[in-house]
Amino acid sequence: MSDSENTEALKGQQTRNFESKEGLRDFLLNIRDKMTEKSAAPIYALSALNYVMNSAEIYELLDNENKEIARDIWLRLKQSGLQLKDPPLLFAEGESTSDSVEV
Image (cartoon, rainbow, N blue to C red; front, side):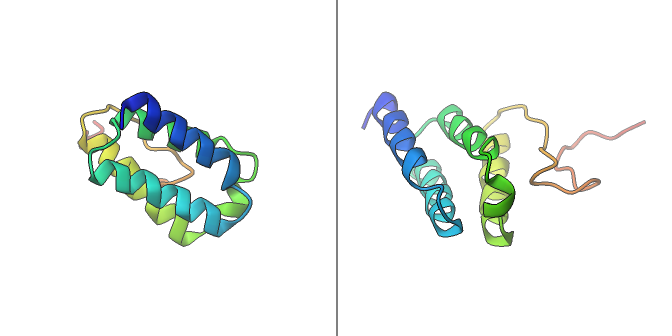
C-alpha cells in the first residue's frame, strides 16, 4: 500500500470513527499498528494525530485509555526523529518527555 493510499485510508476512517470513545480508540490503535508495521510514514501518523487533537469533541472522547494510546503514538513519533513539543492535552505540566534540561 502506498503512502497516498495510507493517507486516504486514514482520512476515510477519520470521518467515520469520531462518534464515540470506542471509535476514537479503534482509530488510534489503527495509527499505532501502522507505525508498528512501518506501513505508514511518521509524518502521516502525525497528521492523523493532529486531526484527532483538533477535533471539537476531543475533550469528551479522550478518556484515560485513549490518552495512553495517543501518548504512545506521540512518543513513537519523537523516537522516529521528529522534533516535537509535548502537547498539554496529552502530557501534564512537568511531565515532559524531552531530554533538555532547563538552566
